Length: 574
Image 1 (cartoon, rainbow, N blue to C red):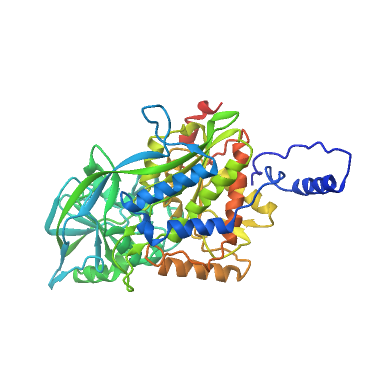
Image 2 (image 1 turned 180 degrees about the horizontal axis):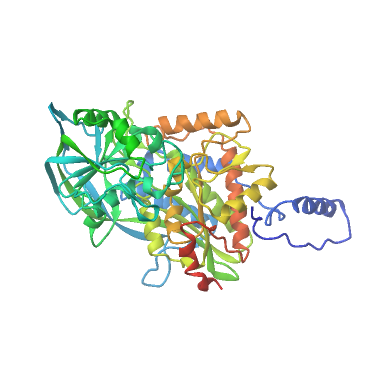
């Protein structure tokens, strides 16, 4: 385990020991047991400020913070005003006058349905089955350039997990010609069910993510791809699929959309898939077991075909990252980034109570509140040696697009960005004896968190649910792919709570994911216990502040897929 960043400098103490000076001396000596940056008197994270920020940002007035909506305008205005009130400088795009604004423009393509979706499934000798959008399937508006998608009896092919990984000697496609055909694949990795194999066991790799599976289907020349939904390997229920994938979809502007997008993307309910396989003369569970081996080869589902028709429209929009900046006093060209996404799902399908505003209080009102509170505290502290960037990104919910855009168009050079510390959906169930990352990252930052936690008589524990692939599901991943050491702090199903222990922590997590995650019920509550958020955010702030006042360069551990990318820019950090 690595030590905490920085060292505690020696202090000169005057000999005149009045009561006040003696008290100060005792406090200084007591703080020597803690990592650097904690010895000086400083203000703590304020729970009420956290709650107040979430209450505003997750209110109905902000309409679920959908991108390119009135909700975005209100969110950008609120964040900019809060950054300014904290004492930050604008850190976004430069205008014609050379001055920076509070925002970085992020151009995107919004793909939407222009009318209803019809889908019919032919299943061998059985009568065709009409599939209900949002119930039986979740079909996405096409992200190719097509404005009309019509498929008549397109054959269906089971493609296992839809993985092509030459470095692991794994190929689910085996050269099968997918032209004019729709693939059906399983979610997660081949190792998920057994916890053993070539894909990290229970820990999800990027091959397990839905984003990868759609991209690989495009590379393989498929007409479309359906992902079979199962709650455990997906790490979320069907309600999340329905709410996330049947509405507008967004992407960065590309030269060749067809190179990364198949015309038809969708999810299919597990029970519908089982029925489909049965009527094609196949056993779903048996084929699923076969797909967990290298010997698997594509299986044409005899008599099974899908007919789909819908209209789509594609509009160019501009959404915004919101950026505050504190200039460094010594190493101004170097930076530490704190980040959190501001967007959520906006206004969508009503729930059973008729509520159609997806407020996004926990996800990610809590992360925004943490970002604003750290900005306030950092701005009140002495000017840091390195610059500190407060980056609130757009379009996380649509594929990490805001952070992806920033990583491709950085306003502060990534080779000289020491680290990215990201907040995403923090838990509201009180203090915990431990702290965990939002996905294991194999990076020295995790060792540093462990050191800071130990100084508080807390314990750092690895991500308790590596099979959920959380590391690939938050904005720090965009920076990791670019080589920047990054980690995220967020939902944790293994919080060992001070009140209630691990059982209470797991119960909260399960309830949130099942009943509120990506649903209108994710609303602010006056009954939240934010003491745990305050404690975690305070730890992250101290660690980031110490890093900003050091010459330390966090690094990826040996074996990390991001280590080589970072090392390619090593010369720029000397």
